[in-house]
Image 1 (cartoon, rainbow, N blue to C red):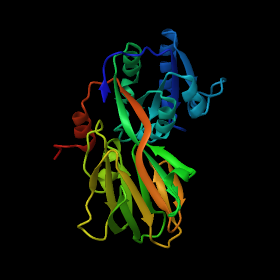
Image 2 (cartoon, helix red, strand yellow):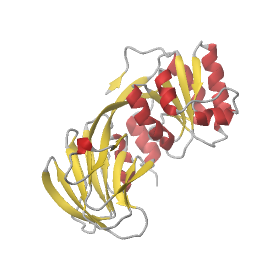
Image 3 (cartoon, rainbow, N blue to C red):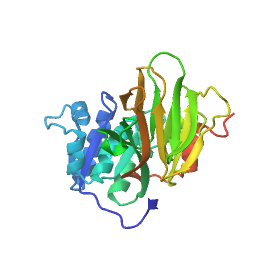
Length: 298
Protein backbone atom coordinates (compact mmCIF):
# COMPACT_ATOMS: atom_id res chain seq x y z
CA UNK A 1 0.00 0.00 0.00
CA UNK A 2 1.34 3.44 -0.95
CA UNK A 3 0.93 6.28 1.52
CA UNK A 4 1.31 9.91 0.49
CA UNK A 5 -0.12 11.63 3.59
CA UNK A 6 0.91 12.09 7.22
CA UNK A 7 4.55 12.49 6.25
CA UNK A 8 7.10 11.96 8.96
CA UNK A 9 9.88 14.51 9.26
CA UNK A 10 13.10 12.66 9.86
CA UNK A 11 15.60 13.90 12.42
CA UNK A 12 18.08 11.02 12.63
CA UNK A 13 19.24 9.40 9.39
CA UNK A 14 21.25 6.21 9.07
CA UNK A 15 23.54 5.97 6.05
CA UNK A 16 24.29 2.46 4.77
CA UNK A 17 26.71 1.88 1.91
CA UNK A 18 27.71 -0.91 -0.41
CA UNK A 19 30.99 -2.21 0.96
CA UNK A 20 34.22 -1.43 -0.91
CA UNK A 21 32.48 0.82 -3.44
CA UNK A 22 34.83 3.80 -3.43
CA UNK A 23 32.62 5.87 -5.77
CA UNK A 24 30.05 6.19 -2.99
CA UNK A 25 32.36 8.09 -0.63
CA UNK A 26 31.83 11.51 -2.26
CA UNK A 27 28.04 11.05 -2.21
CA UNK A 28 28.18 10.13 1.47
CA UNK A 29 30.05 13.32 2.26
CA UNK A 30 27.59 15.48 0.30
CA UNK A 31 24.59 13.80 1.88
CA UNK A 32 26.02 14.07 5.40
CA UNK A 33 26.69 17.78 4.83
CA UNK A 34 23.14 18.37 3.56
CA UNK A 35 21.66 16.49 6.50
CA UNK A 36 23.74 18.47 8.98
CA UNK A 37 22.52 21.72 7.36
CA UNK A 38 18.96 20.55 8.13
CA UNK A 39 19.86 19.77 11.76
CA UNK A 40 19.63 16.02 11.15
CA UNK A 41 21.79 13.64 13.13
CA UNK A 42 23.71 11.14 10.99
CA UNK A 43 24.86 7.64 11.86
CA UNK A 44 26.96 5.48 9.52
CA UNK A 45 27.04 1.74 9.22
CA UNK A 46 30.46 0.08 9.29
CA UNK A 47 30.79 0.00 5.50
CA UNK A 48 29.97 3.71 5.12
CA UNK A 49 32.36 4.67 7.91
CA UNK A 50 35.12 2.64 6.27
CA UNK A 51 34.56 4.35 2.91
CA UNK A 52 34.81 7.74 4.58
CA UNK A 53 37.82 6.67 6.66
CA UNK A 54 35.88 8.34 9.44
CA UNK A 55 37.35 8.89 12.86
CA UNK A 56 33.84 8.19 14.15
CA UNK A 57 33.23 4.45 14.18
CA UNK A 58 30.28 3.07 12.30
CA UNK A 59 27.65 0.82 13.78
CA UNK A 60 26.48 -2.65 12.92
CA UNK A 61 23.23 -2.51 10.98
CA UNK A 62 21.06 -3.81 13.80
CA UNK A 63 22.42 -1.17 16.15
CA UNK A 64 22.01 1.49 13.47
CA UNK A 65 18.38 0.54 12.76
CA UNK A 66 17.58 0.73 16.47
CA UNK A 67 18.92 4.28 16.75
CA UNK A 68 17.63 6.10 13.63
CA UNK A 69 14.21 6.98 12.20
CA UNK A 70 15.06 6.40 8.52
CA UNK A 71 17.79 4.52 6.63
CA UNK A 72 19.26 5.69 3.32
CA UNK A 73 20.98 2.89 1.42
CA UNK A 74 23.60 3.75 -1.20
CA UNK A 75 24.19 0.62 -3.23
CA UNK A 76 22.32 -1.87 -5.34
CA UNK A 77 19.34 -4.07 -4.66
CA UNK A 78 21.59 -6.59 -2.93
CA UNK A 79 22.65 -4.02 -0.33
CA UNK A 80 19.06 -2.99 0.23
CA UNK A 81 17.94 -6.62 0.56
CA UNK A 82 20.57 -7.20 3.23
CA UNK A 83 19.12 -4.29 5.21
CA UNK A 84 15.42 -5.09 4.67
CA UNK A 85 14.79 -7.67 7.45
CA UNK A 86 16.73 -5.59 9.96
CA UNK A 87 14.84 -2.42 9.07
CA UNK A 88 11.50 -4.24 9.05
CA UNK A 89 12.12 -5.70 12.51
CA UNK A 90 12.96 -2.20 13.81
CA UNK A 91 9.98 -0.67 11.92
CA UNK A 92 12.30 1.82 10.21
CA UNK A 93 11.61 2.96 6.61
CA UNK A 94 14.30 2.71 3.92
CA UNK A 95 15.16 4.88 0.92
CA UNK A 96 17.46 3.36 -1.71
CA UNK A 97 19.83 5.20 -4.05
CA UNK A 98 21.07 2.93 -6.81
CA UNK A 99 24.83 2.42 -7.08
CA UNK A 100 24.42 -1.11 -8.41
CA UNK A 101 23.56 -2.54 -11.81
CA UNK A 102 19.81 -3.13 -12.09
CA UNK A 103 17.98 -1.56 -9.17
CA UNK A 104 14.29 -2.44 -8.95
CA UNK A 105 14.13 -1.47 -5.26
CA UNK A 106 16.38 1.58 -5.23
CA UNK A 107 14.08 4.35 -6.44
CA UNK A 108 16.74 6.94 -7.33
CA UNK A 109 19.91 6.65 -9.38
CA UNK A 110 23.24 7.99 -8.21
CA UNK A 111 22.91 11.23 -10.22
CA UNK A 112 19.70 11.97 -8.29
CA UNK A 113 21.07 11.37 -4.79
CA UNK A 114 21.11 15.05 -3.78
CA UNK A 115 17.56 15.56 -5.04
CA UNK A 116 16.41 12.40 -3.29
CA UNK A 117 17.74 13.61 0.06
CA UNK A 118 16.20 17.06 -0.42
CA UNK A 119 12.82 15.53 -1.21
CA UNK A 120 13.08 13.16 1.74
CA UNK A 121 13.75 16.04 4.13
CA UNK A 122 10.91 18.08 2.64
CA UNK A 123 8.44 15.24 3.03
CA UNK A 124 8.16 14.79 -0.74
CA UNK A 125 8.13 11.02 -0.81
CA UNK A 126 5.77 8.07 -1.07
CA UNK A 127 5.73 5.07 1.22
CA UNK A 128 5.06 1.47 0.17
CA UNK A 129 4.60 -1.29 2.75
CA UNK A 130 5.83 -4.55 1.26
CA UNK A 131 4.89 -8.09 2.18
CA UNK A 132 7.75 -10.29 3.39
CA UNK A 133 8.12 -14.06 3.71
CA UNK A 134 9.24 -16.06 6.72
CA UNK A 135 11.15 -19.22 5.80
CA UNK A 136 12.26 -21.91 8.21
CA UNK A 137 13.89 -25.33 8.05
CA UNK A 138 12.60 -28.03 10.35
CA UNK A 139 12.50 -31.77 10.78
CA UNK A 140 9.78 -33.66 8.97
CA UNK A 141 8.29 -34.70 12.31
CA UNK A 142 8.55 -31.30 14.01
CA UNK A 143 6.40 -28.18 13.55
CA UNK A 144 7.91 -25.20 11.81
CA UNK A 145 7.35 -23.08 14.92
CA UNK A 146 9.90 -25.18 16.83
CA UNK A 147 12.74 -24.44 14.40
CA UNK A 148 15.64 -22.15 15.25
CA UNK A 149 16.57 -21.80 11.56
CA UNK A 150 14.15 -19.00 10.70
CA UNK A 151 14.71 -16.04 8.41
CA UNK A 152 12.59 -13.20 6.98
CA UNK A 153 13.09 -12.21 3.34
CA UNK A 154 11.81 -9.43 1.11
CA UNK A 155 12.36 -11.08 -2.29
CA UNK A 156 12.53 -14.85 -2.19
CA UNK A 157 13.43 -18.09 -0.49
CA UNK A 158 15.02 -20.65 -2.85
CA UNK A 159 15.67 -24.36 -2.32
CA UNK A 160 18.47 -25.32 -4.69
CA UNK A 161 21.68 -27.22 -5.27
CA UNK A 162 25.06 -25.67 -4.56
CA UNK A 163 27.44 -27.53 -6.86
CA UNK A 164 26.86 -30.46 -9.22
CA UNK A 165 24.46 -29.75 -12.08
CA UNK A 166 21.99 -32.47 -11.21
CA UNK A 167 18.25 -32.27 -10.64
CA UNK A 168 16.81 -32.71 -7.15
CA UNK A 169 13.47 -34.12 -6.01
CA UNK A 170 11.18 -31.97 -3.91
CA UNK A 171 7.70 -32.66 -2.55
CA UNK A 172 5.47 -29.60 -2.27
CA UNK A 173 2.34 -29.16 -0.20
CA UNK A 174 0.27 -26.00 0.15
CA UNK A 175 -1.84 -25.53 3.28
CA UNK A 176 -1.40 -29.24 3.93
CA UNK A 177 -2.64 -30.30 0.47
CA UNK A 178 -0.24 -32.30 -1.68
CA UNK A 179 0.61 -30.43 -4.91
CA UNK A 180 3.32 -32.39 -6.69
CA UNK A 181 6.74 -33.93 -6.60
CA UNK A 182 9.09 -31.71 -8.59
CA UNK A 183 12.21 -32.90 -10.36
CA UNK A 184 14.07 -29.65 -11.03
CA UNK A 185 17.15 -27.60 -10.26
CA UNK A 186 15.23 -26.09 -7.34
CA UNK A 187 12.16 -24.17 -6.28
CA UNK A 188 11.55 -20.47 -5.65
CA UNK A 189 8.97 -18.97 -3.30
CA UNK A 190 8.80 -15.23 -4.01
CA UNK A 191 6.90 -12.18 -2.82
CA UNK A 192 5.34 -9.74 -5.30
CA UNK A 193 8.41 -7.56 -4.71
CA UNK A 194 10.63 -10.53 -5.60
CA UNK A 195 8.59 -11.46 -8.66
CA UNK A 196 10.96 -9.34 -10.79
CA UNK A 197 14.06 -11.12 -9.46
CA UNK A 198 15.05 -14.81 -9.70
CA UNK A 199 11.41 -15.83 -10.11
CA UNK A 200 11.13 -13.77 -13.30
CA UNK A 201 14.34 -15.29 -14.68
CA UNK A 202 12.79 -18.73 -14.07
CA UNK A 203 9.66 -17.93 -16.06
CA UNK A 204 7.50 -16.62 -13.24
CA UNK A 205 4.94 -13.80 -13.65
CA UNK A 206 5.40 -10.16 -12.74
CA UNK A 207 3.13 -9.35 -9.78
CA UNK A 208 2.38 -5.79 -8.71
CA UNK A 209 4.34 -5.13 -5.49
CA UNK A 210 1.39 -3.91 -3.40
CA UNK A 211 -0.48 -7.22 -3.77
CA UNK A 212 -0.49 -10.00 -1.18
CA UNK A 213 0.62 -13.16 -2.95
CA UNK A 214 3.26 -15.88 -3.03
CA UNK A 215 4.72 -17.02 -6.35
CA UNK A 216 6.05 -20.59 -6.46
CA UNK A 217 8.30 -21.25 -9.45
CA UNK A 218 10.27 -24.42 -10.24
CA UNK A 219 13.78 -23.83 -11.58
CA UNK A 220 14.37 -25.65 -14.88
CA UNK A 221 11.79 -28.37 -14.16
CA UNK A 222 12.28 -31.75 -15.80
CA UNK A 223 8.65 -31.68 -16.95
CA UNK A 224 7.44 -28.75 -19.06
CA UNK A 225 3.96 -29.02 -17.53
CA UNK A 226 5.31 -27.81 -14.16
CA UNK A 227 4.40 -24.14 -14.29
CA UNK A 228 4.65 -21.30 -11.73
CA UNK A 229 1.80 -20.93 -9.24
CA UNK A 230 0.41 -17.66 -7.84
CA UNK A 231 -0.98 -18.28 -4.35
CA UNK A 232 -2.89 -16.13 -1.85
CA UNK A 233 -0.72 -14.22 0.59
CA UNK A 234 -1.93 -16.32 3.51
CA UNK A 235 -0.86 -19.61 1.88
CA UNK A 236 1.64 -21.86 3.62
CA UNK A 237 4.11 -23.63 1.34
CA UNK A 238 6.04 -26.68 2.54
CA UNK A 239 8.91 -28.17 0.53
CA UNK A 240 10.26 -31.55 1.64
CA UNK A 241 13.65 -32.64 0.30
CA UNK A 242 13.42 -36.15 -1.13
CA UNK A 243 16.91 -36.30 -2.67
CA UNK A 244 19.71 -37.80 -0.60
CA UNK A 245 22.19 -35.13 -1.69
CA UNK A 246 24.04 -33.29 1.04
CA UNK A 247 24.60 -30.04 -0.86
CA UNK A 248 21.08 -28.58 -0.92
CA UNK A 249 20.62 -25.13 0.56
CA UNK A 250 17.90 -22.63 1.35
CA UNK A 251 19.08 -19.37 -0.23
CA UNK A 252 17.56 -16.26 1.34
CA UNK A 253 17.31 -13.12 -0.81
CA UNK A 254 20.61 -14.15 -2.40
CA UNK A 255 22.32 -13.03 0.82
CA UNK A 256 22.59 -16.16 2.94
CA UNK A 257 22.46 -19.92 2.49
CA UNK A 258 21.39 -22.51 5.07
CA UNK A 259 22.00 -26.21 4.48
CA UNK A 260 18.92 -28.40 4.10
CA UNK A 261 19.43 -32.06 5.00
CA UNK A 262 17.64 -34.94 3.29
CA UNK A 263 14.15 -35.40 4.69
CA UNK A 264 13.97 -31.90 6.16
CA UNK A 265 11.18 -29.51 5.29
CA UNK A 266 11.37 -25.86 4.27
CA UNK A 267 8.19 -24.00 5.21
CA UNK A 268 7.49 -20.58 3.70
CA UNK A 269 4.62 -18.31 4.72
CA UNK A 270 3.83 -14.64 5.06
CA UNK A 271 6.04 -12.94 7.62
CA UNK A 272 4.51 -10.83 10.39
CA UNK A 273 7.05 -8.17 9.42
CA UNK A 274 6.35 -5.50 6.81
CA UNK A 275 9.07 -3.60 4.97
CA UNK A 276 8.51 0.11 4.39
CA UNK A 277 10.15 1.30 1.17
CA UNK A 278 10.31 5.02 0.44
CA UNK A 279 10.45 6.62 -2.99
CA UNK A 280 11.28 10.23 -3.75
CA UNK A 281 11.05 9.91 -7.52
CA UNK A 282 8.06 10.27 -9.80
CA UNK A 283 8.59 7.07 -11.78
CA UNK A 284 5.64 4.70 -11.88
CA UNK A 285 6.18 0.99 -11.41
CA UNK A 286 5.50 0.46 -15.11
CA UNK A 287 8.15 3.02 -16.02
CA UNK A 288 10.63 1.14 -13.85
CA UNK A 289 9.69 -2.13 -15.57
CA UNK A 290 9.99 -0.58 -19.03
CA UNK A 291 13.39 0.88 -18.20
CA UNK A 292 14.90 -2.07 -16.37
CA UNK A 293 13.52 -4.79 -18.64
CA UNK A 294 13.94 -2.71 -21.81
CA UNK A 295 10.35 -3.23 -22.94
CA UNK A 296 9.77 -1.91 -26.44
CA UNK A 297 13.47 -1.88 -27.35
CA UNK A 298 14.41 -3.49 -30.65
